[in-house]
Amino acid sequence: MPHARTIHSAHPVATRRAFTLIELIVVVVVLGIAAAAIVPKFTGTARQEADNAVDQVAELLRLFAYRQSLSAQQVALWRDGNDGRIHLLVMDSDPEDPEAIPAWRPDRFAAPVSLPLGVELVEIQNNDQRVDPTEWTIASVPGGERPKIAIRIVGMGVDSTVALPQGSPSVVRVDADKPAPFAREPIDLSRAGRDFEPW
Image (tube, one colour):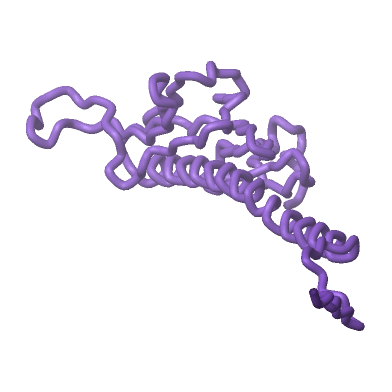
């Protein structure tokens, strides 16, 4: 019986090959870089959504000031306690029944503002008096001064106060993590004892 010959090659053939330590380190580094690039985008989206909500509240305050200064109608800001949306209201009569008593109706040109989940109104001030943040109404007085309004909004990394000074048509936004912007406020020189100062 003939003997079987065994052939030995100079290059052994590997049947299985595992990852080397260098390959594993490279994969971990690439995954780390990808995670560092993706995670801030997810958190940044939530912050951007909260920033947009603050801007929408500021725009509603601007519209309130605009309507109050140019219209003979009484205007108000109202937060619905059921759904939490903030509305701009106008004291208006029903167009279908002109003889009816005027009532508060939503402004046709201002969409209500909804706050995203996790963003809350924590403090509302009407002429420096605190108001219940869950449901409130701040109305202008016909023929009188516009109320001074301040709304503090907190959530998703945002802590901002949106203020509408009494005599100013512009809204001021103050973020807790940034220096306060310069805002002009009206002053009564006689009350301040500065009525004889040149200006």
